[in-house]
Length: 118
Image (tube, rainbow, N blue to C red):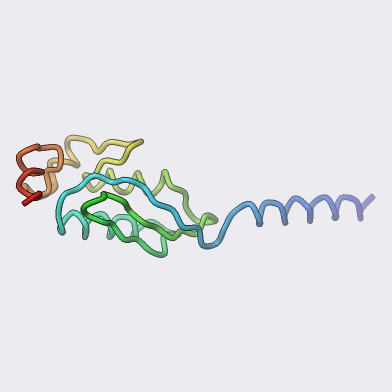
């Protein structure tokens, strides 16, 4: 009986370990318009425990990540991003957080967005 319980426990443990990847690549869309946004977004993402790599592309708004799924998940990263004032598809920054970004980073303002297109 003891051996059966040990085998069941080991099977469960190995299944749990294999279900999570140590280095998973993923992307997500994050709103922003300029180089200052890029720095802020990447810094916020890298500040989340388990994020090993973060690179935000200004034209496409895509944040490329390498994460350790054993330590973090996409929602934790998105929460960190909205905390510094940047919207994601699932979460929106509060007005308070958004208002803290520099005037040139106001991606919700059509005039600011147009000024960065030139």
